[in-house]
Length: 310
Ligand SMILES: NC(=O)C1=CN([C@@H]2O[C@H](COP(=O)(O)OP(=O)(O)OC[C@H]3O[C@@H](n4cnc5c(N)ncnc54)[C@H](O)[C@@H]3O)[C@@H](O)[C@H]2O)C=CC1
Ligand SMILES: Cc1ncc(C=O)c(C(=O)O)c1O
Image (tube, rainbow, N blue to C red; front, side, top):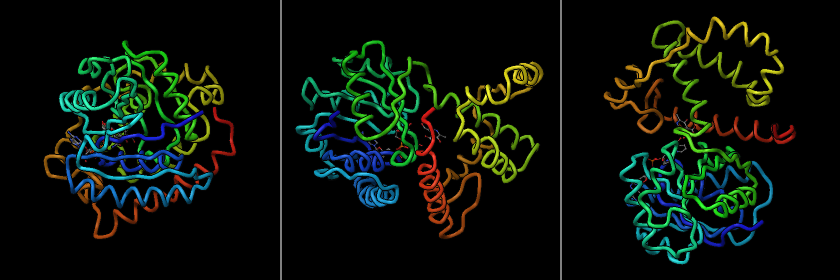
């Protein structure tokens, strides 16, 4: 199982640095490109931080890996074997970036996208050679969550899917191959959970602190160890039938983004990145919370590696 010798990450915001650090630890020379010099400067720091977190997890660090940063896309793509696009989740932007990439790389270079759920076939329309294009959906934080959704579009060559699965396994992550569907699998499940959670808080059924306690120590902890399909076996399918027969029709089914979210965004409250969102954060609180989350994820990942994969 071999990794590409050289790979390029396009877009160095929340996701790019952790992706770069993960591939570099496995021995790949990673080039990171962004249109923003500020983003590149921040990414240098967050890539170094992600590398230090990977040291805490332990495991092998392959020789030869490195990360370099460039504001010149031609430099970042020169000689690359594998490209991961991680620019903002806007279809037209992604299409124009993909076309730009295609014009600068060799015909055999795989182009993957980290889109959270835009159909791959739709994005692939931007390319003259969509057979090389595939979804590679990392979960945040990408250097800590060892699962990647692999989503071929209608035009993706089977050999490209096989190669991506090989690459994902080569850096020690679990590849999950899926048929194409909007939102893919992980975000369909996550957004079903988030829709219900936000509705319960917005309707005043529960405070957000109580909701977070309930999910973290209840289903969150349990689902980290037992997947939903096996949880059904653990609970009993008859119980699921009884409860779902009265509960499913009560669950939130709204199709719009809830007002508590749109109003926060309008007020400039985006979460950690703006210093406030669902919660308020005083000076230093965001860094402390991030450190707490990283420590928890490192500990849980170590514990889970001693259990069966499914
Ligand atoms: N944030 C998350 O939790 C996750 C995000 N994703 C997906 O990954 C992708 C990136 O997401 P984030 O890293 O959160 O976005 P972000 O907004 O934090 O970072 C995007 C970066 O792309 C750069 N950029 C914008 N236009 C560009 C261009 N033309 N060429 C090169 N760089 C450009 C921006 O300067 C920025 O640094 C999106 O498709 C998102 O849906 C996937 C999994 C998790
Ligand atoms: C809220 C939210 N939306 C999308 C994604 C990934 O595409 C994530 C994540 O990976 O954690 C997320 O939390």
